Image 1 (cartoon, rainbow, N blue to C red):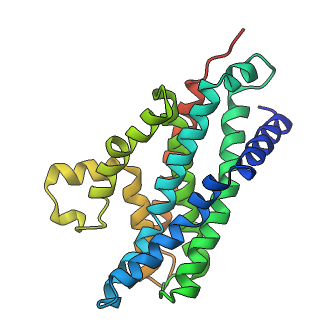
Image 2: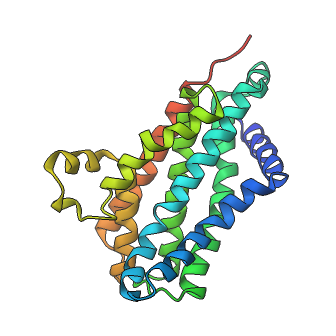
Length: 244
């Protein structure tokens, strides 16, 4: 892997995103807007909103980055850009890591905006503090980026990439502990939740929201989320074929 080629790939992706204003709006405006709407949904029960809002920072960035990354990467595959790149001296890891770096930069901005709106504008109290909150949202976004890069290999069109949402994301959303505590679910669902990456993203935000100190459980959750992301990136690189 060449750092120069990896950075060149990341810069190319960022230039493309810079000209795609609708995608930027989806990434930067939608997450804080949804959290703001939720505040007024629970206007009669502010304690419920205070409980849910930090958890959603472990979910919304992951889902949106998964959606945008999978579609953007699939577009590279279907319009021939990836095949042309693979005829050049650009390694698979240069491509995958370059994409990951570009979307990680986007994810960082998204995390700063979403956390800023939640903590500042909506005045949600998070016992763990601002920095862990931003890190939790960023880890969720990185996970979505990595999973989107991987899943894009199994879709033949942008519509199929969107179809992966209910099949790949919704089961994780239902079992992550957002709606019902995991130990109250059926045993087989608990076992499924234990292997789903979104579970640990939500758990990390729970630790940040309701515990003032950094715990070993929080460290475990962050490590597992990043490990899932790393595995997804490696698997994603394996789906890229070198063209002659």
